[in-house]
Image 1 (cartoon, rainbow over the protein chains, first blue to last red):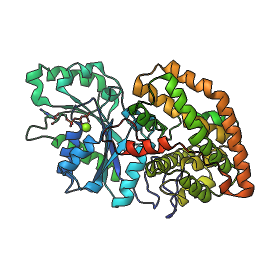
Image 2 (cartoon, rainbow over the protein chains, first blue to last red):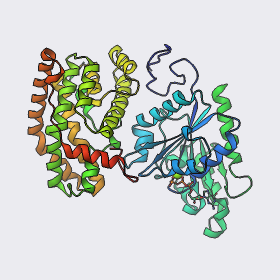
Image 3 (cartoon, rainbow over the protein chains, first blue to last red):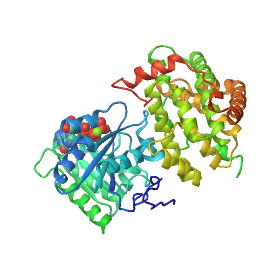
Image 4 (cartoon, rainbow over the protein chains, first blue to last red):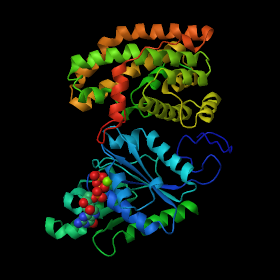
Length: 225
Length: 224
Ligand SMILES: Nc1nc2c(ncn2[C@@H]2O[C@H](COP(=O)(O)OP(=O)(O)OP(=O)(O)O)[C@@H](O)[C@H]2O)c(=O)[nH]1
Ligand SMILES: [Mg+2]
């Protein structure tokens, strides 16, 4: 890879773990998953819980609007200069996997303009079960599904469910209303993912995003170790 | 280096950000100017002989060693719409990254240092072609082809146009593409002797106006 640690050197070209001035760049975590599963709500909750202990920023990838970025701005989860929207040309998985240049620019610009960051969350536009992030863009990825999308999604598998570093099954509060069997979802997820972790959460309850935040802290500790 | 590098560079899957742009097609579809394969062909022909010719000449001149800063300024002067200038620089920056990762070269590193937020895409395209060992004609072909291929694939998504029809439009434009590439290279050679004023300045006012309107839409599929 083409490392350039000269202080005035041009920006890095890829996922180099250091910035052009030689300092360590922020940990980048991607959040993907089907439309409406709760990616933005999870990002917002993570920002609220982590913003006092970490320097963080968010990149959103909407399909045809800036709604996710606007939601985060409206909710004031972070100051506006820490939230950037990338336009994806009708194809979110292209921008997070096949042609990541616009997203790389967004994360680098955030670090250049705000100063050193600990963590950047990259939210994908809602997509299908095969949409995963390139390793050239993120260091780890969370796949967010919900109980209302059908309790057979973990059984169906696909790259998101099977390979994501963390699988989040969101909206467990809705399970009784949509007839989803959480035990079955957990067993299917275990079968698909072996030792990879799975979190069941409801952002409508007290515990909310706590377990996912704990996982993020763990990744960050490993990144800076 | 090999001629086949041109296939790598001109491939629509070359990861340099083009997929998020429609080359003005989204605005033209909304305005009712592109409704099917026939009007797509007209639109692409217009782009080819204006934006395509200018981009081709700029890219070819960059391959021939003309100062990128001068070429960038000359391209600015040939791009009245501020929205298009922003889009062209964004694409230039993305291509610079992809080019540096693919064909590492001191010249591209210097360009990245000179234009940290991106130079006009055709300027970068020329220098990337050079780094790949390609010639002025290759760069002109690549720029001219890109000026129509992006619009055609965007219209497949925007109108659910039959992809065979869209590809047929590009195939039938091929002889004209040859001529535009020739003229672009000829202009680029003139630039080497006479300076950047020898670059063509063909422009399509509706593309510029459409780009300004498009940039202000709240809901759109493509960035430009
Ligand atoms: N009941 C319930 N609703 C939730 C939960 N998490 C999110 N929601 C709601 O689900 C809807 C969609 O949430 P978003 O966070 O926008 O989903 P998203 O995955 O970002 O959606 P896209 O970006 O459009 O793909 C919103 O109305 C949220 O308030 C949850 O745990 N329980
Ligand atoms: Mg969202």
